Image 1 (spheres, rainbow, N blue to C red):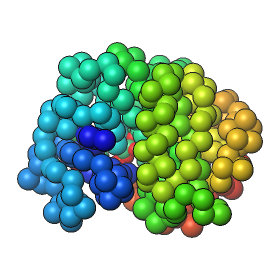
Image 2 (image 1 turned 90 degrees about the vertical axis):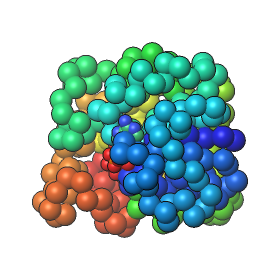
Image 3 (image 1 turned 135 degrees about the vertical axis):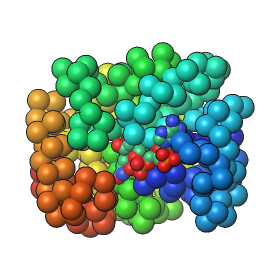
Image 4 (image 1 turned 60 degrees about the horizontal axis):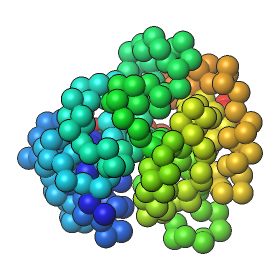
Length: 248
Ligand SMILES: NC(=O)c1ccc[n+]([C@@H]2O[C@H](COP(=O)([O-])OP(=O)(O)OC[C@H]3O[C@@H](n4cnc5c(N)ncnc54)[C@H](OP(=O)(O)O)[C@@H]3O)[C@@H](O)[C@H]2O)c1
């Protein structure tokens, strides 16, 4: 497939490497221009381009950018054909994204993104920590392979997102519609807890929407206390132990 990826941060850089290595034709952009993209990231065959170029003439687009940056790319996405699959790995963290009243009032994060973009999306890769994504990919069929939820409203969006998740070394678990995707948001039992295909269905079912914001913010508070800021990502083992203790 031809894939455009926005974002070369914690999540984007691993998606670029994995999807290029899986044989896809990947274009990648950050907010500062192609010349600022690390050569190492391009060694797997991806091409550094502008944001606009990353969104044109592709089969799928991945928005691995902070949630609060999504409105600024909405005008560019307006020109993207309806059949292009747009995949959103983003999460709402008020300390980083500043307060978004609709989400604070209970709007499902993926539906807020749909509203900003004015088009359907699939939600995937939001519920795995960057260290697990980078270090724990496994070939299909390996016992203990991590499963992550994929939510979408259109069959084509779901099918493409699930296939690409598999290409990044993870089991793709069909988590239903975007309206149900609060079950994979920060604070939920299935969020960044590195569960397997056998475990993740029960974790999604066990989510309690009213408890998610508190548990999300507890996780941030502990990470800020132990790691010194809100942006350093924990190593996979410590991060998973912490989130399991709070969310499960
Ligand atoms: N970190 C995790 O463990 C994790 C796990 C799952 C999901 N997520 C979610 O994934 C999203 C990205 O997180 P992250 O940790 O990878 O963020 P990050 O490390 O801060 O990277 C963000 C990237 O987005 C780029 N960007 C911002 N605005 C852009 C624009 N308008 N056009 C093109 N690129 C743009 C930035 O480019 P510049 O550097 O040039 O500004 C940067 O490369 C967030 O919503 C996060 O919640 C993160």
